[in-house]
Image 1 (spheres, rainbow over the protein chains, first blue to last red):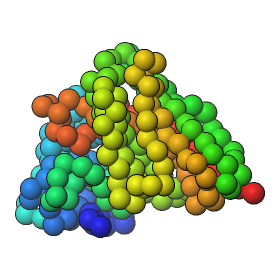
Image 2 (cartoon, each protein chain N blue to C red; image 1 turned 90 degrees about the horizontal axis):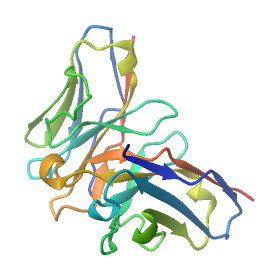
Image 3 (cartoon, one colour; image 1 turned 90 degrees about the vertical axis):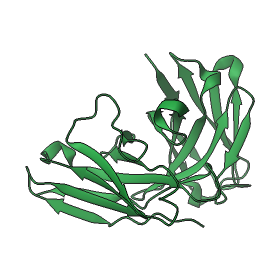
Image 4 (tube, chains in turn orange, blue; image 1 turned 135 degrees about the vertical axis):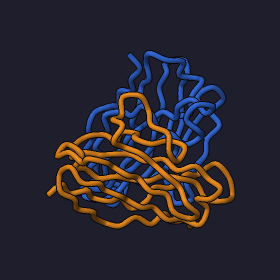
Length: 109
Length: 123
């Protein structure tokens, strides 16, 4: 089955830039989405179509794509950004089903 | 306000059946795919499947095909996730979520989420 690979954890100090990667063979052909999940809460969409930001999501969140890797970048990290982040995409066979990456715990030191 | 409201927490025994619900409001329920996502305790998100309430077209993840049934009743704007025989390994939080406008967000963006339903299966 198709897999999206994320690092288990990323740590940054406040004000620094956090980069969370997600790798998958079909990412050059399929859109990627990113979700933020804080403890005890439902996930929130923070990036869609690789690099677009929904309304209400701070500008410090951005997405990019290069080959088989997509990256979520959080510039000027704040304490409130500490959360789990998940990428989501589809394999090369079609639009559905989708899969989630294993998730990355972002720790703000 | 656009929202999805899920049914309350459940405690069941292995082998029992269960159907949990997700009621949409504030938007055209029949026009957007609704999906289900599992999160086992302390673990990541798992994409289970989606349904289009307008015609009940359903797509499952291979991991969940045959293990659960996704359905919808468009007359009451409600989607369902059901099990015929629960196992302890079904213990998890289950979220429903709505896929947003394809043309705007692409085909995979869950932009509205329910609050989650905790299912506990224990003898």
